[in-house]
Length: 95
Length: 493
Image (cartoon, rainbow over all chains, first blue to last red; front, side):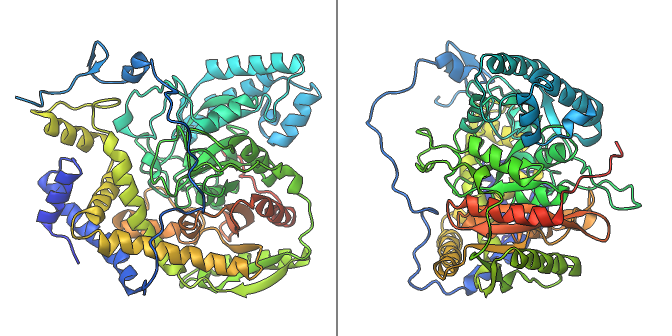
């Protein structure tokens, strides 16, 4: 498999990264280099092999479903580029 | 004051205890060393002198009151990946411009609870993606080591390049670091320092900026094996805020130093003898085998047949997880925002301006391998191969092997702005060929300096252990250290 310019632009759109024509062209070569490198995995026989879901055998610890945190709206918005009364401000989304 | 900065943590601990100097004096010595040399190395991206002196003063007061923690009064550097309350935390990315967290990572909180002092935040590859520290928004870090008769600036490795350079150049007593594919062990090997990536789950990941969540682990970079053991004991903990942190008691790692290797079985994997490996590394490896044999260990040849697939599988799994983790940087809640004509335009412009080339490349790869139609061929296949890589290790450990000895890196430190490496991302990725298997299998791995190459640059050996058997690694690495000696760069700065 190999990626072309249209695929790079589609993936950039999915990743929400603006790319110039020049960026996209450069990325075609770079991404194909990496894709070709990882392609060798297809030669491994994985018949009957489960995909890894957890690297260490452990049961996830559970806790009671209680509220243990909160009341820190000021802290949460402290680093936001634009806020109003503890709301995050974004460009208009709904017309 | 230069003498103070040359002490190991263990030495400083004794001298602080004997009241030969105070934590304030030790901290001042480090701050003036940083002041004099950071412009040379670019190891720190933020120095926090007021905070450091405040913490040192508080430490001296605690000591006077008889309260002495395991790292009481010891000045440390912190990789920029760890959230530190109200202090620069940007994973050395432009996209986190101005970010000052309102919380503290569990690992750093553990260090402060044990009495340590923070000197500042250390340079790293952007979001820990790199093997040379050159992808940092704050520029490259210079390795304190230079080849004999050469003035060329070398990389300290990456992604924890600032941590390794600062420890090696005596700009902190020890440093925190993180390792997703080799980011502790490769820079440690390049700078003649000791670095350990503990078992996945040993240190809490809470408050550590996420790169690839199933691979990321924190660990120390230190001057010697003992210091690494002291630091890891403080960093490790079970944490309610990270469900993957393990609920096992943290051993006194230092106590394992000096124990005999008699009866221990060390595996030598034939797959790590890669094509084109420099003869010097072969020799170093043979030397390491001889040292362990002399110390009473039994050496056995082993096979880890899926080794060659670890790096390609990593370059699917890690970017996939990164593309998901880094989706949060959208210009809304923190960091950089570049305005656009609508919200999607704002996201795209913000991310285009905020992420560097390597980070974008990995997000793109990750997005591609997770996209409709490709998921099974790439991501699912890679996770199955990962199961096989882990199984390779399990078979060897089940057969009675206690630890595995390999080289840490395929070469010594290379030059900054190496054209050959810059032209082909895959070539740079090959730096992690010996370290990445360990992350894929969630195992602990330690890099310990073992010699110098013909150019006079440090080379390291790696020991790989069973899950949560870091003590075996410290014990074995200490034997190598005793035989090889310690390596410090000749001061030219």
